[in-house]
Image 1 (cartoon, rainbow, N blue to C red):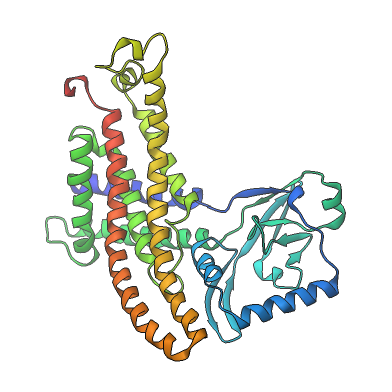
Image 2 (cartoon, rainbow, N blue to C red):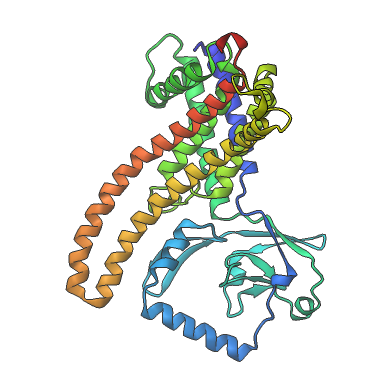
Length: 386
């Protein structure tokens, strides 16, 4: 890769990283007022809240702890020391009936978990979502929607990782310009083998030497975005620990990008093979277009498989590690000696799983990038390759 081409690739990579940072808010959703619940009376709320807090202090809830670390949240839980909960409140940005509401998520830290007529749902299928909490409007049921564009934990983690990726690759690009013709040093020596790996073993082999350069910015972006966030998610303290690539909204956006690029760049032969698949009996194509329908379904399922594979593998890894952490507290609540014995096994297995997750972090980035490159190659294949 020449210096001129590498600079072009890196600056395109920076642009796409910014694009991902803007387009990956995994918590953009709308909830109707039909789901809103009336605010209970103050005394009953206080009593219920007190009982809830007491039950939380008296018993360890493994499922709640695991979900808190795996799913998205409107605040970033850093640590819990006794009764002290260290959290970072995040900005709440709501659009309701044409009006913009902005405030801090710490405003929901009260008995009713509500502020300015909005409520952060604490239970049920809409747990974690912001809905209307106004008794009169809930009874009327006007159907107006609350659009949530808040900076959540996943969004903040994406912005942080995007910023760090930009810094890293700008530094590498400048280093490549300065050290032209010299042996790579520093970050360049660490990242250049990975860049060459993506170029030679993924892009060239899957797309072809004539067309691979066009797709290199995207392939490099998704590879390093997934790899970097996978590694960042293994760090157990802020700003690490966020389950970015284990969020299905994030993997969905990346899969949609792959689908769009594949569809837009598909050549004539690609679409002809879908409509009139060669080597298939005519009665499977006409008059009932069975094979074309199957091929079109295949086009849609390819990005779906990309989305589910990455989401499921990363989320499963986090759940397994957190599950073994939970065993220490569960058995410790039964018997202190038993808890200490289980902790030895749990910690040993956690170390093993974390080492395995390091390998999985690279494998998942490689698989997603490789499959994307294969889809691009199939969409641009020339007729003489048949």
